[in-house]
Amino acid sequence: MNRVLRLRSTAPLVARHAVLLVGVVIFFGPFAWMVLTSFKSSSEALAFPPTFLPSDWRFDSYGRLFTVAPFGRYYLNSTVVTVLATFGQIVTSLAAGYAFARMRFRGRTVIFVILLAALMVPFEVVFTPLVTLLSQLGWLNSYQGLIIPNVPSILGAFLFRQFFQSFPTEIEDASRVDGAGIWRRLWSIMTPMARPMVGSFAILSFVYNWNNFFFQYLVTTKSSYYTVQVGLAQLQGENNTTDFSLLMAGSTLAIIPVIVVFLIFQRQLVAAMSGGLR
Image (cartoon, rainbow, N blue to C red; front, side, top):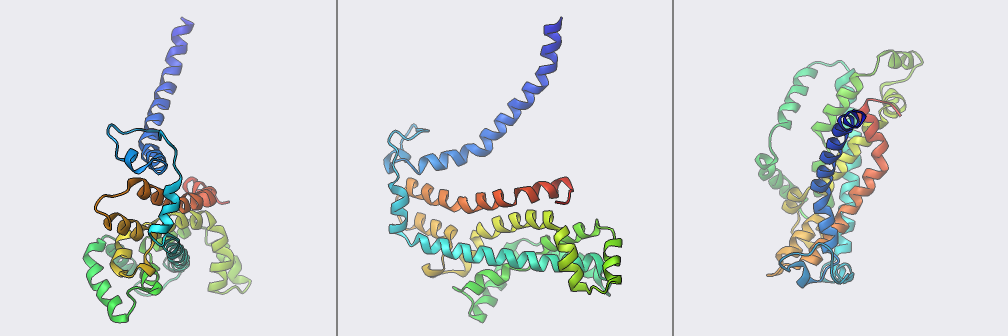
């Protein structure tokens, strides 16, 4: 009888762990395959039936990656563009979210609704006039062309607006009595309290800007301005037969900054998801 009760109590736990294990395999299986393929030879990467573990661990793909293409330059371009665009999105989203949440001005609701409607417009609808505008400004193949169009973030303004609306107004009223202006209240009081939201949005913004292949591909035609994602695409297209071990090595290096940023801001992400302030 005790054994039956024990089985009944442990069966749901075993089922949950089985589901989680399947999820881990689904989500991390392709990542593990990518990393392992980068250590295979070119012939083994195309072998059929495929092998999971390399029969002969090779590290030359990472060295060849920097000789067949200026991958270091691609990495630098991606870093500059992503860091500056992410910083710009955080600053403008903080200011816009605070304005829509706390400031009272004519047409605030209408403007916010228009912004939300614009959020639903797919990028494929606007990329032609956007590229035309960048061409007329002379911003194609330039850092400003890669960064400035990505600085405004409607999603960021919406997220920070919702976040700031959850704060009690008494906090700002006390600082207003002490003589703090609107910018002082925003940067000295509200922004430190919004650190969990800043950290979680920084992750979303960094991942988006780092992997924004389509836009970066449209505005760059010179290899000196290629980002990592565009460089990998060109590396794949320049050869009649793709060297998958080389391509997987580049993809492995391309995902490292995303993992690092997530590890740095993971506490803020968890705090924002749980609704806490840390």
